[in-house]
Length: 341
Image 1 (tube, helix red, strand yellow):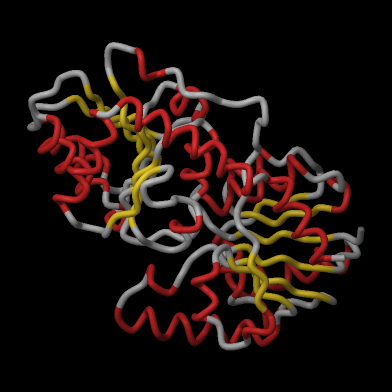
Image 2 (tube, helix red, strand yellow):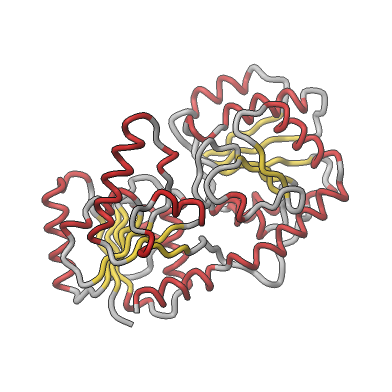
């Protein structure tokens, strides 16, 4: 395998950065992987000397020079641009092959930014050999459809089973893992959880993640008659999911969220909004429910249904685990490395 350079310029640690970490930890060709990243946690997680941490202080022209210098020095054959920010640099990258790896959708933006951003990205794709998307519905946003390859996200999958154990505990736990940003629907989830379980002290909502809405949400929660915990950034996601009974992702916009796959790998039923590639993971009525964003009654109804029906909850959890086998990280790595040969 020839050398491949992953470029990720996202400052925060999210699904796109976890994707890189998972890919690197699962490949059998680690010596051929190189990284230029902007997030310090991702940089530290990558157990290789073939990496470079860059900051916004470099400036666009300085960053482009740095990238091209790295490519020449390390005999890079293929550059993978992970996320929108590096994709914009495609016309200026000097490599034999360029792959754009897109984790978001135009629907994540609004107004002029949505349309101008879509045009600029599609112009950048002219300099790319392939455009990787995470789910099938995103293909409609790409002009040059012949370049498109769909590779679903994958996670480390334990075929021995990570089965749910929380259901017999005194309290039932609803879990959400998300950034605390306005378009993630966390405030909406908190409101509907409070409305649904105000008279049931045995149900708790745990929200893992951080973001610019944290102070607002903390003040909001203090006034509510229900048990809600804001956990902040959680490193031990495994233990959190293993002790949960239901996973909810209430986002207005998502792409192909790893958090849903992680919940499925822990035998949890899932309630998620109909956005991005969610319907390719969550089968309505089989391993959870796909609901419209901001529909108060349906969110309350589905939460109550799963929490109040243990047999159905466990069956949906088992179905989640079975469906999870379609999304192993090994399959993702195999398809990616086939693409860069």
